[in-house]
Image (tube, rainbow, N blue to C red; front, side, top):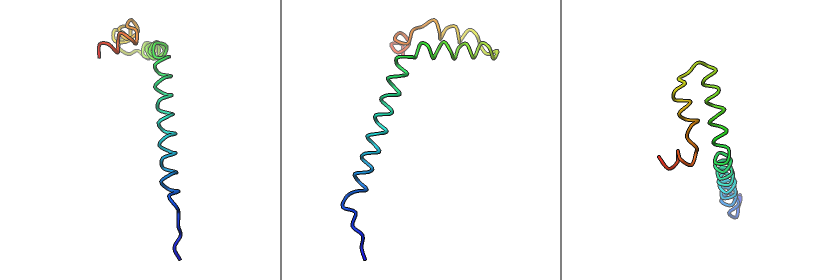
Length: 71
């Protein structure tokens, strides 16, 4: 006895790919909006843990738009 799937597995895979793409785009948008805040929080954590303070202060001095231009 053969079971026919009628392309359901292909349709499900496409739906998963669409969901993953939407989540990735949303994550990029959120990181783009909050990148300066995230950078400040991470530099504060590095400073409190006793890391390299010169790199942390350099990272917080540049804005995300300027950082992306220099890539």
